[in-house]
Length: 323
Image 1 (tube, rainbow, N blue to C red):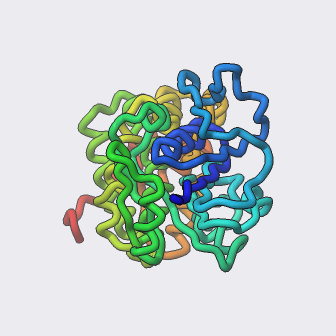
Image 2: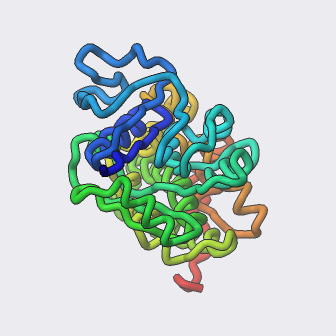
Image 3: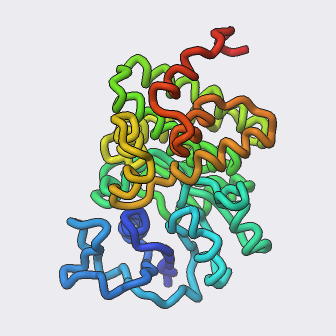
């Protein structure tokens, strides 16, 4: 008798609901943990992802899972530690959030490693908008763990022909790409909001990749990871796609709206708000120059305005591209 795989998804926001739909599409029985399971409508639609009815193979509950083959943590990064501390380590845990814990400067797997020091851990990242994953449109992502064979086994639990989930043994690079893309997306949106042009946005994104390569190397990650799905792939989507909350936040800031006001107007969390200062501090701690990240952190903190931000970046010395 074939065992039906059981996948638990922690967090019933748009991303968690989309992952639950993908897991069901991959043949799993899915438990979707929600703080308020009563929010599921009579048509089996979650409010944060309207238009997508959940199949009967997805159970929505507020009871935390006690048995699973895989656990996907899709809560916001700043809530990961608190949510994780309520869970039982009953399955391999995959962080599906992106960012850096503001209070500690730790990335998702470092946080989970403190909470679950003996558990199998991994991280899932890539250029994925929730509504497109929910619709079953073609997409690709990467699942990273320190053990490549283990990463492949875990990725196989979610992979379908339309959702190509690649394996990686560079969780550091994958987490860094996932965190930084939100910060760079704010910068890209601000560039467009201030009407600095498409050329400026392309140049800014490219120079940001150089910053991330330096930081990844300093943290022990692989520079080549940033040329993959968790790096350039996610940057391309988040820095150009209108569905990106971080891009829309930057767009509003570039048009002159205060950052906190712009963030409050969004539906959902723009992780780049918390990640920018944390990432800047992380780079400083490792002696890595990250002018784009530093400028975004100052802009969001209200220390500089958009004119000063552009002037600061454009006044930097021009040296050799790959020096």
